Length: 198
Length: 198
DNA sequence: TGTACATCAGTGAACGCGCGTTCACTGATGTAC
DNA sequence: TGTACATCAGTGAACGCGCGTTCACTGATGTAC
Image 1 (cartoon, each protein chain N blue to C red):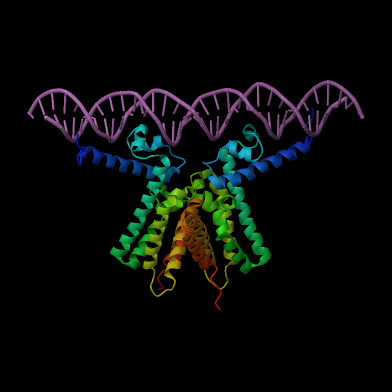
Image 2 (image 1 turned 180 degrees about the vertical axis):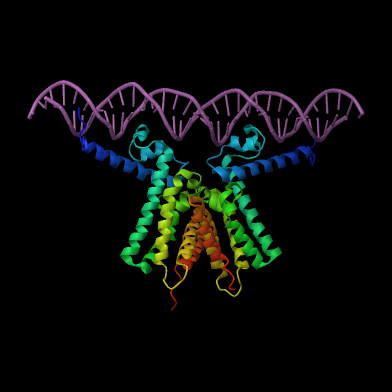
């Protein structure tokens, strides 16, 4: 009759892992087709399950979308900060920027940053904003700490730099001409990481 | 029996005007709710019509979306160029940038630029890219001609500048903190139009 | 000017479909004794 | 160890709904003579 501390430990752990699988599937599909472009059915099928079980893990598709996007952006922010701590500001900055402004990041939208990929869709879902705002703040702080000390207004440059990265990916994806896409990415790159003078 | 040059001239002119009304309604609704978030029914109702008549004007909802977005961006590009020609580079640049990076532009998405608002959705519709690419090129050229002559690499700065404007609007819309939104817009503004030295 | 006819922009019922969500169920897992 | 029972993660049929699209129609407008 008495409730035990951890009954069905095996099953509970498995449920946590299943939840993670649903989030991973949703994360990829939402970024590939848009949140409105993917059904609960497709997400569950991609996770190797049937659609009915979804509501045992999430209260609604909207809740899944908000959690998945917040989680994805928070992970990206913490990856950037880890890179700064481990590699130092100079190398971290160039790695972050080169990665973000690469052709691979533009093309593989299903593994890309949520800001250029789902930003506009998320903007229409105010419930999802607070955790995204926190992640943006964290990214701006990491970037600001990576910028050369002697240059004034590091935070202002970090804010403009992040805007530039996000916008460049949006524009590069809209261009039907690969040469223009490359030009956009290169221009953004050299604004953020000025080519070292010879 | 013989076909006349302009039979039913009145009706034909009215049909052109109706088509324009449908596009205007779609333009506002798509930017407010996203293309996937608005039905043909809603567009026609907003235009003061019933949904059945839609297919007398457009072959599909996708065709409408592509045409509306291409048209909207092309108009914006030509507005910028007109401003440059009429006001001169210095004033045109500051007007374009101040307008784009204003709180009103961020908030009133139904009248805003399609790049930050529908860019990601349009990126998934490759059929719509070519005319958008042309408009982007035109905007970059106008911006490049507005930038101070003595500074080298005007085109590169224009590309990065446009990216920065687009990204700043995306980020400002994602932030639940108005102070952060303002900070983002201000940072982007001062990158594009450096405050005149005193 | 008047009348009969042709055109076609716009109407609204209907279609098949896929969506988000619910729910009675099943069957594997863990518990009690 | 063995057996009876409880739990609950996952199943799949079913729901009401709104979507994009089609189509037979109506009625206002313009044409022919």
